[in-house]
Image 1 (cartoon, rainbow, N blue to C red):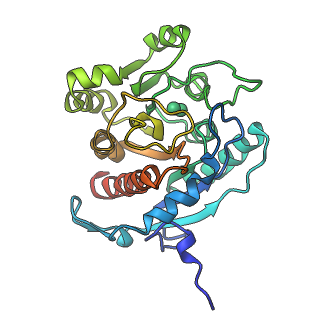
Image 2 (image 1 turned 60 degrees about the vertical axis):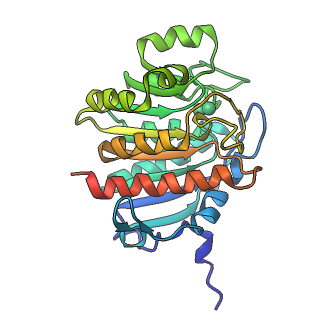
Length: 283
Ligand code: MN
Ligand code: MN
C-alpha cells in the first residue's frame, strides 16, 4: 500500500488523542485583493517541511518527538462567512480538547474565526498591513479587515509588529493599539521591541498570528500583497521564541507559493520553531 503521509506536515505523527498541537490547513483565498494563490499555502508549507532535519539544534529537541498531529485541510466554501464558521468550529473543538491549534493559511481573513473561538487576552500579529478596514470589496471578512474584526471581538490588547501599509484612518485607529512599525523596529532594534512585548504580554493568553508579508518581499516573494522595507525571517524567529510559550493558538497565513519556495520554506521552519518554543518553554 502506498503511504501518503508526506502530504502532511513532516514529523506530525501523533494521533489526535495524544497530540498537544494540532496542525490544520485552510486553503482559502476568496477575498484576495491583489495576487491570488494563498489557497496553495498549506500544501506548499507542508511540502517544504520535509526538507528539514527533525533535530532542531537551537532547541536541542527532535521535532518528531513532540506530540503533534496534522488533520489535513478544511474543505472550504467560497463564501467568507462560511469559512469563518468552519474555522471557528474547528478551533473551538481543538481548544476545548486542551490542545494548541496551529493553523496554516490561506489568507488572513481566516484568523477572524480562530480568534473568535479562542477569545485570547492579547492578539500579537506580525503583518505589513494594519488590516483595520471595517469593510473591503463587499465583505467585513476581507483579509484587509482581520485586525478590525479582532478588535470588535472585545480584544483590546492588540500588538501589531512590522506594520507599514494602511490608510491614514487605519493609522489613526492604530493609535489606540500597540503598533511597532517596520521603520521603528529598524531604528530601535528588534531585541528592544521584543523585550517590550515580553513585558506587555506577561502571563496573558496570547493569540499569535503571522502574516507572511511582515517579512520584506525581497526576501520571501511568495506573497499576495507584497511590501518592501519589512522584517527579516530572523526577526520573526526571535519574536516567536519569546511569544510562543505564552500562546494558546498560532497561525501562519498569506503564503502564496508562486516563488521558488522561499516563502513556504521560511513558513515551515517558523511553524516548527513555534511548536518547539512552546513545547520547550511553556509552563
Ligand atoms: Mn494581514
Ligand atoms: Mn499583510
